[in-house]
Image (tube, rainbow, N blue to C red):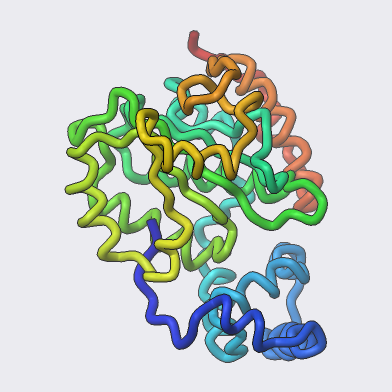
Length: 284
């Protein structure tokens, strides 16, 4: 799900046209163009970040500069790095979104999403919860990795449990414009026919090149399951996705992990986390 943005050229064509030296020159040009940065903005604008913004805008420095400046403005008001688990834990009680304890075949961090467990009515809470997990996952990406994979299980999903079109649009905008090129794959597993109508509306806001990142897999379809196996090892893949591993979301255990992650996040961004160190009561 990505907000539509006209693309001037094919991403793969751009990559092949730019030599490593040319890419490095573009990165230096973009860093110089955004000017002197300090504090969290400087920390955010790592070489990896600069590279992803250039890729998102087909190595157009001016367009990448505009995009990055808009993100820095958004981060200064939304303050995603300050969100703590105790603020969003209630959104994740059902296990509708969590970070898996395994990677895909490319070594990428995996998000497991189960929209059938959606119970949140607050658009703001829903978005803050997902942004919190995105921030945490990016900080903890394995060395050499810049992207994530999303596995979406549609068991129990219905239109009544789906987020509103407005929420989907707002979230898509944030993901594409403030986390560009961070999602390598979105794999919809066994979506019902009803989802097709919802998807047709949502994908109207998508960048056409982002369609390449979306895959569908159905348990009784050999071809689509081969797609699943191309990205994931069945030994690690949960049974809910046609694999062999168990999947059980333990909110209390996940919360303990996230509370520890909050300490790491505060240290990463270089600020005191004293306001968030009080023990959190986890509902069971």
